[in-house]
Structures are given as structure tokens and as C-alpha cells.
Image (tube, rainbow, N blue to C red; front, side, top):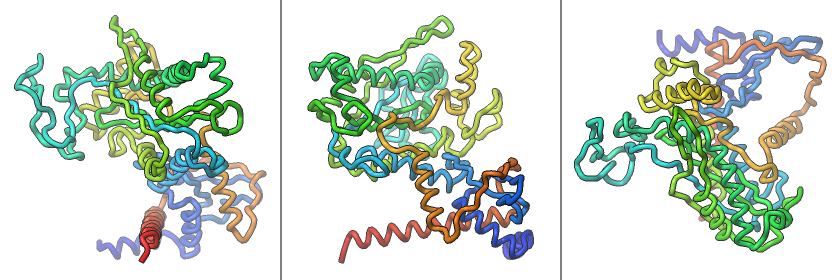
Length: 433
């Protein structure tokens, strides 16, 4: 069957009226690839008269492997949250741009030598082999997309237990860093903890980056504010250099001890700490750089974008290194009695959200979605129908007809093309004649 015959067969799945209604729903969901299908129950149900008697609702997934349109919207909202906390906007006063602010990157420690994509050879060094008989060096030049990048030179030497425990403990490590940073800041300012509470508050947003080697790095934007409910500048003179000094001291002082199988693991961040003042930084570029990590998952191909049952990883398309990380998380969960480790095995032990923030740093996802909804309602010629008396029944997820999925992909590709043209025109105008 030719492509034209396949298209004709798909078009024949819907009447012209149904195709028009489906196209309207796809536009309303932004081209969602896995929409939630709902059926209304009650008088005046919006789903009555729709194709298949269902209403499509966007899945709102942040994972690119699940839904590209919804993940792109999530990534855009995340960029706004990061950017508005430094430049203002979306309900955040523009005066925050004058607050001292810092970009912090906290790295993970080494749990064993892994293949790297660097300028030059992967691992130089004198010839030798580990206790398992494998080379302790690698003279290859790896490209960034090389499947070997991130995997250990010797899987038997690599400390998988320590790596998974570090991922599982990173939230507590960050909490301690913020506590110690405030204490060191008080010390540097000559203030007690109580006096510091009266003069200063640290607001932040942090984003977790799951590296190719399967461990987490943290990126954070930290801002100094005055205490209280308003977003005002700090009452004491605080500089980005002072903030950087406080965070470097805090990271060096923070550690966490975990007992497992008769062995004590001392967990802490790596020695490499990056601190940069944000004054004059291109926040659009920085926020985009941070937001891109939110839509990815560990494997990069969608295999680990959902919770797993023990043993299921054997059936998935993942590298041996990531498979061992997942299996280690399940094993540690059994041995320690910590159900969270197995629950978050698909995230290599890392629990919770990839993006978290302090309450007053910036706007929220909920507020941004409310603004978008209000704008859409205002753009409509007719008011939105009342649905308070309508009950909803979950029918399923995803498109049921091939033509519906094709229309969704076409709509999304059209939006990407329009966006590319818009930014090309804008850059051309900015460059001038």
C-alpha cells in the first residue's frame, strides 16, 4: 500500500464533521500526543456531540519522551519561573533585579572512573589494570553521543551503592547546605542567627541534572531578600562574593552518614563547586539552559520515564550501567527497608521533583497556567460554557484513530515551524540593516 493509500484510509476513519471537531480539540490541547479522554455525565455535557463522545484534555507531562508539546510548554513555564526570580515579571517586582544573586552548581563526588567526552583522550595514565583485570586507562576520543560515555571503566570497581545512596540523599544534603550557608553568612556579617533572621532571607530555585553517569548535579539560582512577605532587598549589605563565600564554606562543611550492610557511607557533594554572580547575565539563555534538564529522563530514550517493577529493567533498552543502577536501587530498598529506593528506581534513586524553589523566589506553575487559561478565555468570542453540574468519567489516554494522531503531529510541527520563523524574523530585526 502506498503512502497516499494509507492517508486515504486514515481520512476515511472520520467524517468531515468529526475531522473538524477533532482538529478543534487538538488545537485546544496544543497538539498533545497522549491526551486524556474524558466523557461528561449530566445535562449540557461539553463532550456530547463530540467525536466518540469524549473531550480531549492535555496530559501536561513534563517528559519529552511522553509528549513533546506538553513538555515544551512545561519547559517554557520553568524558564519563566527561573527568569522572573531575577528580572521580575509575572507578579514578581522588577526591583529583584537589584538584589544580590548567585548561580551555584554543586557536583557529585566520584564513585569510580567513567568514560568521558573531553578534549583529548578519555583517561590518560600509566599502563595498569585494576584488581579485576581491566585497564585503568582509556586512550579513545569519545564523542558526546558515544554510548560508552558515562559508563565505568570497570563495573566491578564502581561503587553503585554509594552512587544510588547519594542520589537518594541529595535533597537532605541541599537542605543542610542552605542551613549552613545562612550560618556562614551570619558569621561573615557579624550577626547571630536570630539577628540574621531580622535582616536577610535566602530565596532560591534549584534544578537537578541527571548526568550520563547516572548521578545528580544540582544547579541553583540564589537571591538575597529582606525578611517578611514582601520581595524587598536585604537590609544589610550583601554582595554576590559574600554569598559565594558562604556557599563554598557550607558545601565543604556538609555531609550525611548512612549505615547499610555494616558499612558507613559518608555522603557529600563533590569538590568542584561553581559560583557565578548573576549581574549582567543573559537570564534568557541561563533559564533555557536549566529548563532543558527538566524534560529528560535517565536513559534518554524513554525507557526510564515511568515507575518500574523489580526485574522489569531487563526488558528495557538501557545500558548495562543504568541497568545496574536500577537494580542497585531495588536491592538497597530491600536491604534497608526503605521503600522509597525501589519506588524511585527508575530515577536511579533520586526522589521528588527535578525543580523546586523557595516560596517567595518567583511565580508558580499554577499561576502561569491560570494566566494562560484567562488569556485563552478572553480571546474567545463566546464565554466558556459552565460545567459545574457535569461529572467526568475517565475513558483512556491517547488518540484512538490514526488520523487523530496524524493531525496532532501535523499541528505540533506547524507550531514549531511558526516559532522558528518568528525568532528568525526577530533576530533579523535586532541585527538591523
